[in-house]
Structures are given as structure tokens and as C-alpha cells.
Amino acid sequence: MFLRKLDDGRELRGYSFADSEVKVLSDNEIELVGSTETVDRDGDIVVPSGIDLKNFKRNPVILAGHNYRDPAIGKGVATKREGKLVFKVIFPPEGDNPMADIYRKLYKGGFMRAGSIGFIPTEWSDTKDKKGAFIRTYSKSELLEFSLVTVPSNPDAVVQNSKGLEEAKEKGVINDVEKSQVENYMKIAASRKEEESDVRHTKEEANANPAANSPGAEKPEKKPAEKEKKDEKEYMTREDVEKLIDARLNEITKKIEKAMNPHYSKELLELPGPVKRSSGGPTKDQLAVAVTQAIKSAL
Image (cartoon, rainbow, N blue to C red):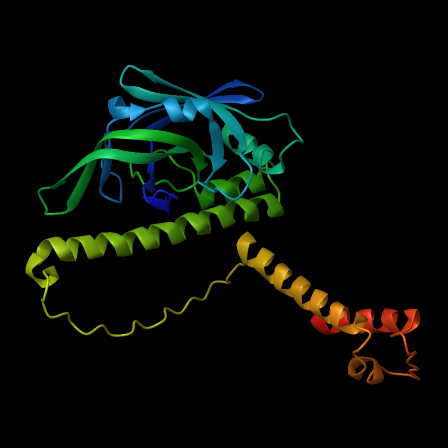
């Protein structure tokens, strides 16, 4: 599954464990054991013996759903054991990270059991299965992070998705707010899968008709795609909220600077109530009124 483009142009991809098994080691530690080399829903295979753990050992982060914007929810220890990749997940002390507390409860209670690696491909080969479906095998790769996920790409992974979250809520393991937080991570993962699906379809079309992509070939006219109607409520991402706040703050700052300009009188003269302007600029009371109005109008 495509995750993101790195600054150097390389792809960061995700791949979920098959036959995932969770062991509770202590109050703050769990162990996930899984074997890859199984075709996931995106048509990918990752060979465990070819995974380089060096970069991960330098920065052994455990993330929630491959979310790179938020702090890590734990640290990990990765090892190879009998052809399988094994991760020990160490959560921070309870109360230090609210999201880590949620995942600790869900995994220790057996409501979630899936893990996914974030890796950089270094060597791969492309084939097709008996049905003609595109398969890419990553024989060598670099491990960057390990994520606890709700809905993995691998169909063989043992997973408790939204049903598991609902069960956890009913049993009092998590509350409504915590359930919503995890579901938002699920929405982010789903959007990434849609993006990856578009890229894969483009590759398959190019492989099926290489002549159409040769220099000088006539390109078919693209029709605008209809916007898909969605009944479900759209949620703002953290990045959208930050952009909105920044825009409002910039607007407020500009209006305040404008009101404080001693050569500017129009906005002050339009303020309610009697306004008297001194030769040296607006008075302290006039500025207070102007600033208040600027903030109200920006909000």
C-alpha cells in the first residue's frame, strides 16, 4: 500500500502481517509475530529475509495506522525468528499519551490484532498470477516503522475492525470519544488505499497497451469524472484544522496592524460611538475598540 513520497523521491509503502499473533508480555508490552510472503489486497509481497532492520533500530517508532503527523504511540524491538518478523511493542506509561492508552487497551483485550510495516522498497520484480492479476514482490527493503492498524491490506491477517471497536466500547474498554479517534485513523487508511488503487490501475493500463504510451502516440481525451456522492459525514483532518486556524490568525493580525497605523482613520471613524482622533494617532481606547472589532469580524 502506498503511504507517501519521501523528500528524495522514493516511495514509502505499507505491508500488513499475515497470520498475526499477539502476545501480552506485561502491562506496557505486547509482542506481534507474523509472516509475510503472502499476497495482500494490493497485489504486493514482501520477503522477510530481505528486510533491512538497520534504520528501524536507529529510530524504533511504533505508530498508529501509519500516521506520521502525530507522535509515536510506543517504541519497538524488531527481530527475525524462524523466517518470521517479530515486533515487541513497548507503550509509554499510562497517562503519558492518550492515543497509546487506547491502543494498549484494544490490543491487550484482543479487540485488535493487526500490525503493518512501513518500508522503502530497494529491489523488486513484477509478475502475474494465474488470473492475470498484477503482483509485485519486494525481495529487498528497508524497514522504517511499525504501525498498529485496524484494517490491514493483507486478507490473511487476523483483524478486529469496526466490530471489534464496537465490542470494546460495549464492554467498557474504550469510550465513544476513543472509538471515534481510532475510526478517524481508519478513514485516513482508506483514503490512502483509494490513492494506491488509482496508481495501480494506471500501471496496469500502461502494461496492457504499451504502444499507447510511446512518444507521439495519440492520447485519448479524458472525461471529467463524476464526483462520488457520500452519505457519510466528512471529517476535517488535523492538517485542515491547522490551516483554518492559521488563516484566521493571519486575518486578525492584518486587521490589528491596520487599526494601529496612525495614518489610518477610516476604520476608526466607522467604529460605533463617538470617535476622536488625536494628531499623533488613535488613542488607547480607540485601539482597544478597533482590535476587538477586528477579532470579531475575522471570527
